[in-house]
Length: 500
Image (cartoon, rainbow, N blue to C red; front, side, top):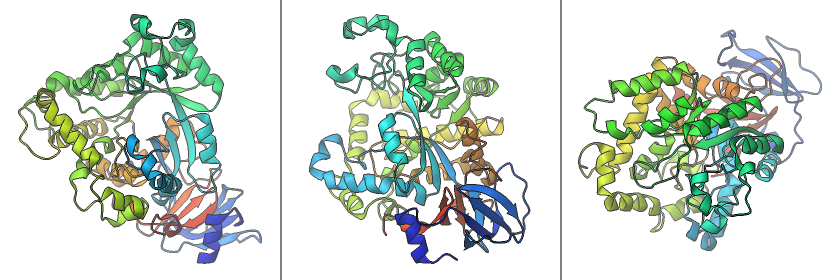
């Protein structure tokens, strides 16, 4: 076994050799038939070059004794938003800047701590991506570019004087009076926007939006189907894929008609079917089943992002703030702040919105609220799990996508949120090997990286995990990581913990 001193070198610098011989690991890899007997895995220059029994060690190699451990590919989260404020509201940042800096220092390590060696950020700029990938220890980051519709979701929360600084917004002639006169509409057609994103060179996908307003809380401008279809088709021509933000019945219908490549979010706003007299544990309204069937038939990959809802429910879990999992993920001083009088601001905000909008809440629930804490969030979570169960049972392509942080709160902690997403997928009747595939090879295919990552095979990049428990038994065993191997460099998990 590599000594702690050598492991710390892997953490601090690139001094440890990337030529590595992993001894006697039991390989657990999706889509790959490998012996149940322990095998050796050779890594040279960050790539797997041999898998077999009793490989002869080379002089340049560091040996890692993995007897009794399980070797899996590194995990992939295909929906994150990096560089946040650690759950602090914008106006709280300046007076707590040290907490935000501590969060951002720990953020890349926390993703690795929970086994995520590849990430897809849906909105970050090229300079941010380059900075992240230049860190000594970080997951490999890929990026989308957001293409919001003029005055739609993704723009309307920005101050009006800055709103149209978004470089890739799509023009809408119906709101032309609010668009600066110097902006040429020809530069903001779907084709022109996609072309600029493609020419920038580092994005692998485009994020578009169809969000009417979260069940009536807002009234956002939404792109017509024809515009979204043009984005998806031009993206395909340019070798990119299109993720379409959609959480409602109307938006999912639009995404299917626009032939989006990826459905970004689960279906939890059921619109006129909110009051359907069905038990989502066992059945769905026929109209929703028909929509899900169309989603599958169109070959649309689905990111359920149940964490967007689960994070709201977790705000009512009194044990979450004191859990060992959170202590390993967020800096201690940040957890202390969230445990104090200001830390519950987001939960208070959700409750205030519900109290101020009783008609919206009743329409969402399909009945008068009962007063249960977090009732709307719990109803949404039941719906999205039921949707996921149906999609899985009928052969949909599901990928692990956590939407971290989907809300500015400590319950959306980096890496941990993705692990919790895997646990929720198991509630959809997905067996552990299917969840592991959703977090590895399925995501690798989505990103166009199946020849590089996503399984333990000769020729692939050595982004790997060593676990003390077999994740084929319980997906929760993905929490038993002992070593993270990043581009051939092994790091003991404990060195990545926020508590270290």
